[in-house]
Amino acid sequence: MPAKPLKDRKFDTRVQYLKYQVLREVARYAFEDRLLDVYTEIPKMIVKDKPTMRCCIYKERAIVAERIKLAMGGDKNNPNVIEVIDIACDECPMSGYNVTAACRGCLAHRCEDVCPRGAITVDEHQKAHIDKSKCVECGRCAQVCPYSAIVDEKRPCENACKIKAISMGENGEASIDNDTCISCGACVYQCPFGAIVDKSFILDVVDLIKKSEGNTKYKMYAVIAPSISSQFSYAKLGQVITGIQKLGFFHVVEAALGADMVAYEECKELAEKGFLTSSCCPAFVDYIEKKFPEMKEHISHNLSPAATIAKFIKQTSPGAKVVFIGPCTAKKMEFQKEHVHPYIDSAITFEELQALFDSRDMDINTLEEGVLDNASYYGRIFARSGGLSDAVAQGLKEREIEFDLKAVPCDGIEACRMALLKASKNALKGNFIEGMACTGGCIGGAGCLTHGEKNKADVDKYGMEAYEKTISDAIGMMK
Image (cartoon, rainbow, N blue to C red; front, side, top):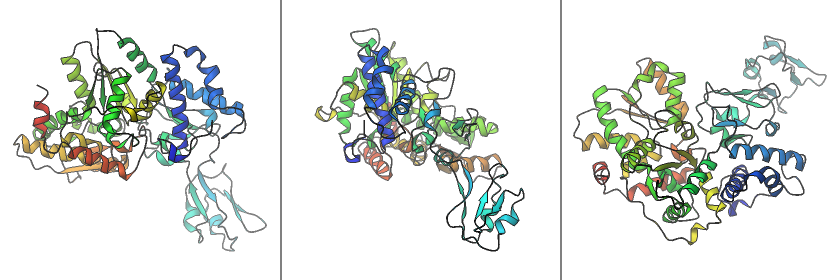
């Protein structure tokens, strides 16, 4: 099925739309108790009588079948939530140094002379060629070329992965090193063929919803990330809230309220210890544990905002089931951790929430507006880079704690790496590292429907709706 025109879609890219189609139909079949038919019917439904992206309908359908598998939980033997669809990863050229058409066939042949492995030869037209079997990617040829005709080309996934967790497999397909990967999902969003996908727990959520119908033993709670304010641009936020409730959730709670709770405690912990790194972004925490283990002792002992408010819900509403809804693929790893899973039962992205709405043929534009009035301005702006630092500063002020806060907001994993590197060498001019793995903060998460500068403005606007409320006010309302 060809993708709808961009103006008629709710996503940034056609890749997201294809992924959504599969998620929507898998959820629909699950609600209708027809999961046995997903592999025979959905590929034919999405890929009809002619190919639109690949060489033939059979390959397209085979790839859709792999997408279905990921939509149903993926490879149970792979602990990572990010997986590669091998048969879909075959269109990108191999990464490395290549000679472009800018090569003028000059007489100098500096590239040939400088190559330490004799990997460069010149043909009868004086054009340079690189023998990949000999090339060691040292880049010397590119440095000496007067025309800049030799370039280091990287696949989109490799370029997106700033922690170098992606390499090429034996057959040229992308390969993810789980010992390095932090499940941030940057590669998922940047892969132009959708060959790298985050596995979904949407079936678990459908199952929870179905079991909650008419069951008084437990109530379903949705904990939504504050970045939801920049998503679902075709409807009002209040309509999205009502839509979530119509799916079968008893109540919708802001993760931003958990952010208020975290800021209130984290400022005190910072003042006591003198130096701290935040614990809100699970990908950032995972990065510290894998690449800077000597810094683990400095990670805040507070749970993330989502886990903090989920813990509160579980303590005050025995038997409750909690589903986190947000922009983050790393949250799908976090909720499975031993210290978090008792509080969060499952996690889905905004992409998957849209699929759930449409699997029930729900037009949220027609719904009345629900109300979210839990968190403060400071809790809500956790969604964008710098928001946590502002909240910690406010927490110190409200608690009347004397501490000279020198926050280092890190926008993206590269900035996190530099700050951690300096801190590990006692060279950081700061005492609080706010780590956000995604550029822009949570509003740049791979599970967002849309990405862009507008999202930051929307989050700030959403925060301003609660500007009169302090962190202490928000927490006090919970009692």
